[in-house]
Amino acid sequence: MAAFDYFVVFAEMRTGSNFLETNINTFDGLACHGEAFNPHFIGYPQSDNILGVTQKERDADPQKLVDRIKAAEGVNGFRFFNNHDQRLLDICMADRRCAKIILTRNPVESFVSWKIASATGQWKMTNVSHAKTRKIDFNDREFEAHLEVLQAFQVTLLNTLQKLGQTAFYVAYEDLQSVDVMNGLADYLGCQNRIAGLDKSLKKQNPMPMSEKVVDFAAMERSLAKLDRFNLSRTPNFEPRRGPMTPTYFTAPESGLLYMPVKSGPDDAVRDWMGRLDDATVDDVRTDFSQKELRQWKRKHPGHRSFTVLRHPLARAHAAFCKHILNTGEGSYVEIRNTLRKVHKVLLPNDDAAESYDAVAHRTAFLSWLVFLKANLGGQTALRVDGSWASQLTLLQGMANFGVPDMILREDHLRGDLAMLAGQLGRTSMPEPLSDTDPYATRLTDIYDKEIEQAGRDACQRDYLAFGFGDWRSP
Image (cartoon, rainbow, N blue to C red):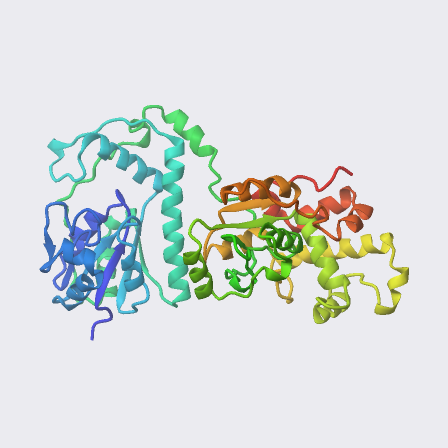
């Protein structure tokens, strides 16, 4: 029994995929059917079907073409680019009987080759005497956008294969000239036949050095030097991914207003405002929705608006600390509190020492908490990254799994931001939001200085960077 029923060559334009396909097709028992899921044609620009399946039939049901390819004699497959029908990924990636071949090329070379082909109109060449070439202008912004798309697709493929416990056969552009690699690929696909030489009918286009392909090569070199090739400027993220947490969302009593809260934010103040907006109370603000119930609510409220509110990262870390760690009553994380004291040496007061816990002790305890928080968000502790102190960026990314909020407001501009939101609902007036949105702000003011600010930046650097937060206060 063959190892695979069919194969997919994941590639991009100008990576050598035509050459690879030509050589796959030289093996008895293997057949590659072009860009089978290109949204603009089926297989090749002049084709009207693949194995009897038309483009219209394929678009209506991509599984039909996959089944026809699987049923064909030998091992059949096709080429797939990042802009092809994404439904195919759901079909083939989870299928262990589908062989994955990933073809890559230096992205600068493929980009320049693509620009030259676009300018000359020559996408394939079988006769060198018909060669067309032209120097192109290198646009660094266009290249960066191109590179971002390619890298995102490669990461998607890699992560999906990892999650499914699969692997792929990787081929670099330079490998395409190796008979041994081609025979190895055939062996991977379960084909016992071998070839002695490559099909050279397709000729390499523009074999000259890069300096002869670009109008201002020196300017291109300078532009590429500015790229962060190794992604050194990225803030590492070791936090677990989050779900949307729809049961924590709130809807106004009557208005089409949906609040998607970030934990340890100004929830009480926002809920109070939502209630009074409809001449009701905070108790009339509904919560504890399932995703199905929220979708039903949205259907019943055309023109609805959703929003969330960001809090300064330092104030939010302080609020989480006061509510869940320092506090020993309702809302306290007792087990985490005990572990913080015993294992992580967070200097928390004993339950019977509340009276002697002054601003100096609070500052010391909060600083030690920020040290722990940095390690926790960095994946260096055994304790969970609770949603109360997970980065706001991670929580927003989790929300996006259900729906992106229409507006992202800021606590320090809440009155003006809520006025804009109310205006979008057609309101000409609104109740004043509570001025005291953070019950722990005074306590933070008492201990705030440059050291506290820097510790907060170290612990919550993703939110500072992602949302452009400055210092919490002027010390």
